[in-house]
Length: 363
Ligand code: SAM
Image (tube, rainbow, N blue to C red; front, side, top):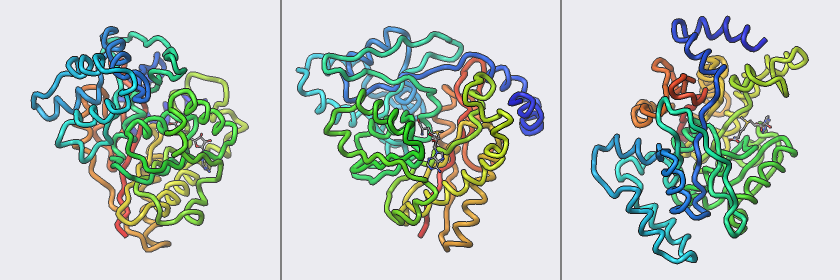
């Protein structure tokens, strides 16, 4: 059902690109290893490099700047000679390694290792260190892009409106910038999974800055209006890769037709709630793991329109072409998005799909 639907809709949407996207969707997905800054960063990074993986966040920014700066190998050496208790201080040392120009527009301190284009190696599962904390989290590396583009700054109040199972929440915490992080998901069982992820990756002191809730995100405008500096709205969608590969919990099951048809409405309401929850001047990132224009650009357009008409809030949609050019060596981007950016699955870089769009609330 999913494939039939995609062949019809995406065939028209992507034209001659569709056959190669389709093969990507039906083939094994590539992962990235998000380094846990609360673990033994130096040792973990070195282990990942010994597998021939590279930190795509670091390498992409370095390449985009074309300026020489300290190599990761040198960073690791200095960390390894330091005693274990100073690991948290090293976290702040590593902050200074963020490339200078782009550090103003990309969330800092996120390290994620991937295998190069065409290399389909897989990462072994992460093992706990002596304190029981895991060294890295495996995820679709494209799902870090919404977090990177959110541009979290030190002291920010951050809301993750649809947070479970928690890959992006964990990435937000890796920035070391969130004064407070509100992580919400309507599903209580999925919030339990998120809590387990946090327990396995972050020390209790950091976890205590995270407020976990299980509310309907659509009501956030009434619950906490004009509050947050940064809001991530990573909405439920047709999860295209999952839908063509897994029977379990498939949104294309005939019993879920109504729910599927209502998705764009739900997505639009969640984005609107995210915009209301942001402070004037605050930044909001909308994201999905679907290729569907109806769930991506159309939702953004409609939410911006309604924010203006119903709430007298004007919203600026940011041009992300600079961001695309920084990460184009790692991901295969669609060149023709009207708003936001879309990572297309491709056999040589089989990440995504991942759509993300950044909005700034003007007043
Ligand atoms: N951000 C998560 C991550 O990176 O691991 C993935 C989020 S997943 C794409 C979408 C989530 O939205 C699901 O966990 C689902 O339970 C949640 N959701 C669905 N409807 C919601 C609502 N009305 N309010 C809040 N969360 C909702």
